[in-house]
Length: 346
Image (tube, rainbow, N blue to C red):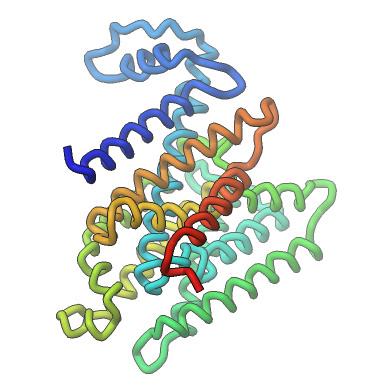
């Protein structure tokens, strides 16, 4: 087997192992063999299998841990794929999905919903994730409109506009929280916990929100693998090779924004996955985005699942927000990469 084949096999095995850990470990331990039998018994033609689970364990497996696992996989994959696109978009390995103010827009939307006490949702989904999703899309739209120059969107202007818009929306979120919070409802606690990021307490409804974006936006992004390769060569080179640079940039910006907005809406702010995972996969798999995108999707989902397992077991029965775990793991590892990579040496 080739080196790349071994890497793909390792990614798949890591994904399966992380899924097994996620389904088995938590406040109540469930034997991995029982979990496997329970999942198989739900498949057509396999109903005769008896997983020998109590009714309480069935609820834990199918209503608590399975949607939590699926959500972690989808969120991690979305953030990692969006990170790949942003790094190619800005031709900078330091770029992340939050660089153009998407996360700050989501924070503002979530804060407004919490402080206003909005409880009306849509299709069983609460007001906070919906408001966060709309806030993230609004931030992206504003950044794009304000960055237009003569029918074009210069990358440098887009980056600076995104940084400014992110700072503005973060300030507005803080202002709304300070001036409008209700201590009786513990608005500050809710906002802070949401900003720390978590997949705990989520349901199949949250999985249903993000799944279409991962499937459609993620699939369309993969189709732009060759275009992403050209973007890394520079705008002029890509243009001379026949690519409509402005149209491709707009499409990729929209797709990555949808992926990030959906992920942030259902999980809150989870850092470093969109920054570290693409960087690491580029070292392992190579710069070809046709392989880098699926590899990053698998690795991003695996990393978030493992971080969630740590978050629920490290200080059990207390659950640590998973965003804290990803930052604690991601920041030192990224510093290590920066120290070892020659291109960052002064």
